[in-house]
Length: 110
Length: 113
Image 1 (cartoon, chains in turn red, green):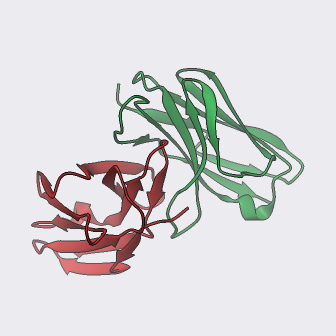
Image 2 (image 1 turned 180 degrees about the horizontal axis):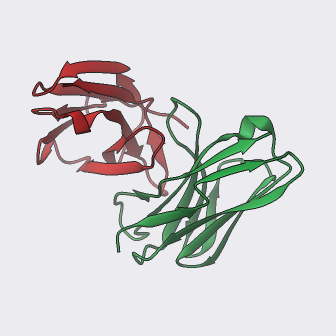
């Protein structure tokens, strides 16, 4: 079942700009993960942040987690055309179940 | 090898057909998953296998029948599907003992006529 809500639903930015998307969830989690999906393809894991972590970096990605507000954000810095994709947050509440948010569609204009 | 492969890439079937989707991984993962994804929607979990045993069935209709013949292979047998079952079917795998990321295959695009 879908637990996360993401906003915005869609985002259009110029190459080189930063893209920020947010994810809110409802129940307690073990970790929160972000995935990217290019059109009609499989999902690619980007980053995982555990419930006792507040911020994590990976290359041009920065993820924050606020468990008191049940929310997370994903920042992509210096965006490139190749970053055009749908981005999903997914919460892991246990028992191997990942609950995906509705996703944010990011378009990076050249 | 950090890849999950799925075959076929595309499948068109009639409502009376029987077909199978296949998934394979050689990363030593002991948890494998089937997801269904409709256009512009997030993936929805269907089944989870842990150490080759079915551990989660998300109330999926019996016309979908999963099978895990060994630790590297996962099948999804399809029979008497409905047009609304048309979707992208994604396979994924992960370590079973730790809460880690899932590795996804490219999916099978299924069309039911």
